[in-house]
Length: 460
Image 1 (cartoon, helix red, strand yellow):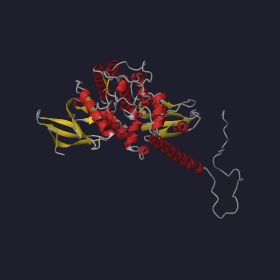
Image 2: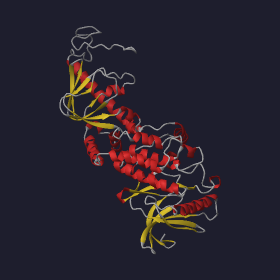
Image 3: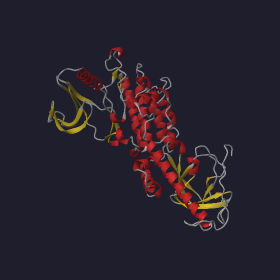
Image 4: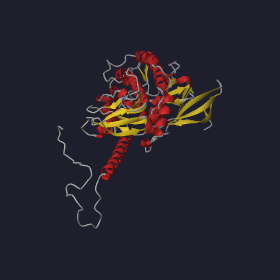
C-alpha cells in the first residue's frame, strides 16, 4: 500500500485482529503520523458494521481529548470499504515490552509513568469519556518517559444514554485487565479505568498479573472474588507504601476505590518523593551478573534469575552475625554470594561454607517441620542473598520448579559427602563372592560411626 487518503505510506508499524497501523507522511503539515486502517467486508456483515461504529467512536471521542498524555487524533475518515484514523506518531515503546520479569523498568520510572496516566484518565473523565480497555499495549511511552494512552475505539461516551450505546457490552476490554463490575456487565464509570490502570501498575512492579489462571472461567472468578497478593510479597524490595495504593486501586468495592485519577496520582507522588535512589537498573544488572557466575544458578534461565532478584533481599553482614539460629521457626534460606560462614550444631562445628553455597534450605523444603536444627554464623564480611520463601511461593511455576530441583540436588550432593565421611570410618566392605562376615554382627559392623535411624513422632 502506497497511499491512504492524502497520507503517503512509509512502512507498516503493526497489525492487529481488525486493523493495521502504518507510519505515514502528512503532506499538509509536513509531519509523520500513524494511520490506523481497517477494511470492511463487501457484504456489510455485522462485524463490518461493528468496526465502522468503533471507528466513528474513536474519531469522535478522542478528538475531544486534548492532553499531553493522550494520543492526539488529527483526522478520521469512514468510507464505503474502509476507514482510517490519522493520529500522533509516538516514537518510543509500549508498556507491553516491560511487563516481563527480566525487562522491568526501574521503580521511579514506573511510578512516574503511572502518575501521568492517572492525570490523563482524570482529564478524559472530565470530558465525559472512559476508555474501557486500559492495558500495557495501549500505553505508549515517548522520550522523557511521557506516556501516551491510545486506542479509544472502545471508549464510552458518558454523555449518551449508556443503555442505548451499542459499544456498552460485557465483552469490551481485555479480560485480565477488566474490573469486577466490567466483567459482571454492571454500569461503568471512570473507576473501571483506574482499576485497569492498577492492574497495569501491579504488572510493571512485579512482572506478573495480580490474578493468574489456566482458563478463562477461573480468571473471571478470581477477579470477581479473590484478593490480589501484596506487591511487597512478590517483590520485597518495593516500598511498603505501594501496598495500600495497589489495594485501593484494585478494590472491588467501588466506594472504597480511588475516587479520581487525581487522588490516585497524589498517593503515587508521596511514594515517589520518598525514593532515595534512581540507580536501581545499574544495581540490578550488577546483581544479575553476580548470580549468573554462581554454579548454583547454572541451570536457571535468565528470566528466572531476574525473577530471583525480585523475590530476594541482598544483605551485607558483618563477621559474627547469626544468619540462622537453632530453635528458630522460620523459612529463611538463601545463598552466600561472597564471604564465609560456619554451620554448627549444639555448639560444635559441622562445616564451613563459602561463596555459592545454600544455607537454610532444609526448613524450606520440609513439608511441616520448620524448626532450625543448626546455627549459621558469618566468619567474615559476607554478602548474603536472602530468598523470601513467601514471595517464592507466589512466583512463576517455572521458577519454583527450578528452585526445587536445584535445592534437592544440593541436598543430595551434601548427603553423598556425609556418606563418604561415614564410610571412611567403616570396616573393609564385604567383597563380591565372599561367603562370610569378617567380624561383627549383621546389625552392627566392626568400626564405623554409631548411626541409628529412629522414627520421629508427630510431636517430636
